[in-house]
Length: 214
Image (cartoon, helix red, strand yellow):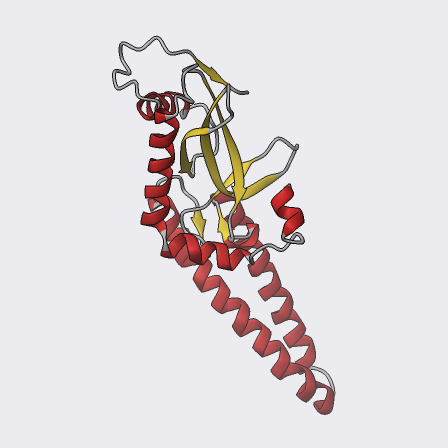
């Protein structure tokens, strides 16, 4: 909070942060590793207890640019209905006065051509969709996935970031970015990572308690 005040609440643009992460991935990973080593040297993990939880982080990819089987079917039906509507309007324009028809017909033909082009793209994505591991296509950010959130009928296209935090000093012990929508399959993997980072290499024999957050 003090730093935010000193900086006058200045913050880098999201694209600046994204580019920094992309360009310095190896260095960031090394910093995280050295941070864990320092915490162990300072004996900050002496309690050997962590809390594990996941948080949903929104991707650049919007809901409109994410396709599932249901979304794809709905969009195909909508575009086919729009094409039928424009074709009917084109027939009506053909029967109107020449000056009126001359103004409407080129615009209607342009809309029909655009709709047919989009329909062709969706048909290709319909063929591609079953080959995707979880039958989702995210066009802007290919690794992101549509995930349900706590609000009824709400969701986000993004990532599920798992973090293990020590319960005494609230320091992040281990973290991992996943595109799995729920936390149920993440506990064992994060527990093993946390044990390793905290200096207990024998995950099978360790009696270190782990507390999963709901």
